[in-house]
Length: 142
Image (cartoon, rainbow, N blue to C red; front, side, top):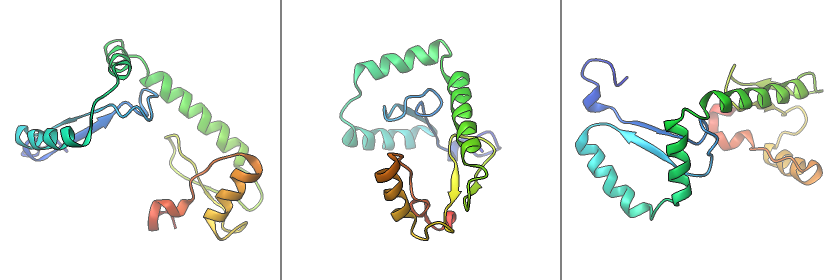
């Protein structure tokens, strides 16, 4: 949208290295947009963030400067997703939903257990597999 006429001065672009470079949890990202909005958000960031460990800054700079990560991480996530889909497809009473890409898989387990949170806790307790109940994503997951 930022490239459309009249949109650059009204568009914020927010991104991170979490998924693209396998740095989930490191909380390293960036924001681009109109100068005045960036000033306001920089002030907000200063009062909500107290610093970034040096190793994260160094790793992110290394990854960006040497083009590490994006292709390799995408391939790794795709392979894991494919493995998961192959393991789940054909499972009794489980329907697979989701996109053609990405690293997430949405399963409809309602014919096994109507309470998705109960199912998630039971799976963790019995099989030591952690999943996020679909209800966590709101009505869009229903």
